[in-house]
Amino acid sequence: MNQDNTIETNKYLTFVLATEEYAIDILRVQEIKGWSKTTAIPNTPAYICGVINLRGTIVPIIDLRLRFGLAHLEYGQMTVVVVVKVVSGPRERIMGIVVDAVSDVYDVSEQDIKPPPEFGTIINIEFVKGLVGVGDKMVIVLDIDRLLNSAELAIAD
Image (cartoon, rainbow, N blue to C red; front, side):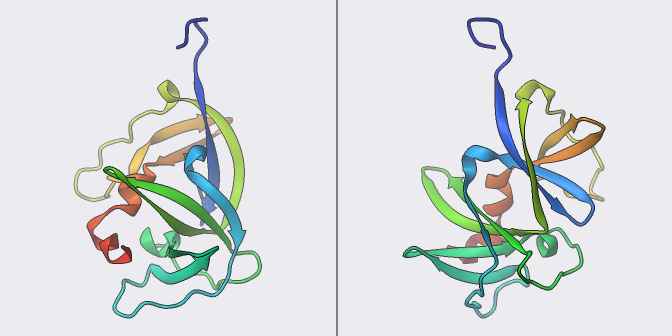
């Protein structure tokens, strides 16, 4: 809360993968762009599509569908890439994530983000910051830094 006793909110960009809606802090979003062909990097996991040159910056592109174990969709005119800033310690880097569609921007109070339920070792929730109710649906809030700084993505450096 601030000095006026009003609840502070942050804006979250939501996007769709398959039938689920996910959210990331909008301050991490650099831009939203259409799909453009990537340059493949040999010997990388299937979910690393390759890299693009974005105004002189080499940007790795990660397919979140494949990263989350969902079925691959063909890339086309409707494919969306969300370019995000990822923080790793004192370092920042730019990466792109392929999503099915961008949905909306919501104002969310940090206190409304509830921790994810415990599933034991069956489901990996390491990248999930929490869940938030928006209207009549639940949105999965992702920790973009953890998601895009994991050991298997170190190759994208």
